[in-house]
Length: 240
Image 1 (tube, rainbow, N blue to C red):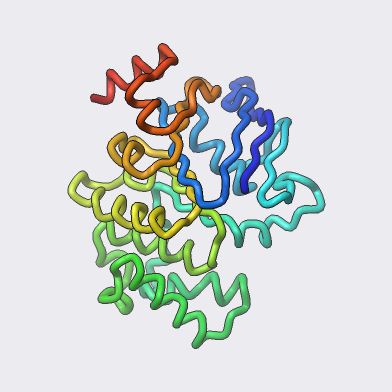
Image 2: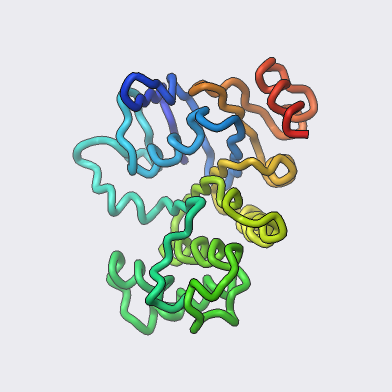
C-alpha cells in the first residue's frame, strides 16, 4: 500500500502540501479533486519521487520513497505515472515507444519486450496502431499509448495526473474507459481529475484538496451527496 504521513512541500515561500496524511490500500481507486494550485499534482510527483518533500514520509509497500538509501529507479518500476502530456518519442513507432522502457530499464530481451508491448497496446485498444508514429494519432490515442507504456513495466500502482485535461472533449471518453477497465481489473490507482462523473463512478474514495490541505475524504456517494466541508460545497456547486 501507499502511506503518506504528514507530508509537507513548499516551492519557495509557497507551501503547496500542508501536512497530508493518507493511506491507499492495494486494489483501491482513489480520485483527488480540487481547484488548480491545491496540491493535487504535486502529491503525485512526490509519491513517485520526482519531487523531494520537505518533511513527513511517503512509504510504498514499506519502502520510504525519499530515504537516501532508496533506489528510486527500482521503486519507480512499481509506480507507473501518466501525465497530461504524453511525451512520446516521435521518431519511434507506437510499438517501439512502448517497448523502450522494458528493454532499457528492465533489460528484457527484444522479443519478450515486443510481446509485452503488443499485449498492453491491445489491452488499451491500440492493436491496429503498432506501426504508426505517435504524431499520426489523435490525442486520445496518444494518451492511451502513454498508459500502455506505463503498464508495460508491470507496475503495482498507477498514478494519473489529469490525463484527460489536454484532450478535446470527444476524446476524453476513450481514455476514461481505459481507466475504468484498469479499475475493474483491480489496479491500485490514484487519479487526479476534473471529471466528476468519472470520480463518482470509479472511485472507492474521493479526496478533496483545497490550498494544500486534504479538506475531506469519503466514498463518492457521501462526498458528492452530502459534502461537509464548505469549500467542497462551493467547489461542487461551481462544477455542476
